[in-house]
Image (cartoon, rainbow, N blue to C red; front, top):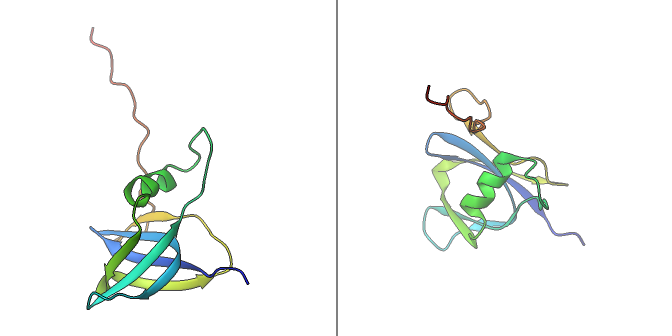
Length: 107
């Protein structure tokens, strides 16, 4: 039997996060939901998706997230992993970190 996979959508600091996890349950902390075994794409070498990299940097060493129940928008059981995302809560648009551009050289 294949392990279950969940897409967890939650609010965090005015942004909507979409993460994938293998474990979702009620937390032993009252009023929280436990999200564990986070799933990230593994890329060798060149970073293909900066959002995925940003999420891995933020949550990569996290064993279990304890999310307040009121911050969770949706939990979906899915067949396969899609693209993780960070969206603006007001507009729903993806938050894209701009590529750093060098400043103009001094004259």
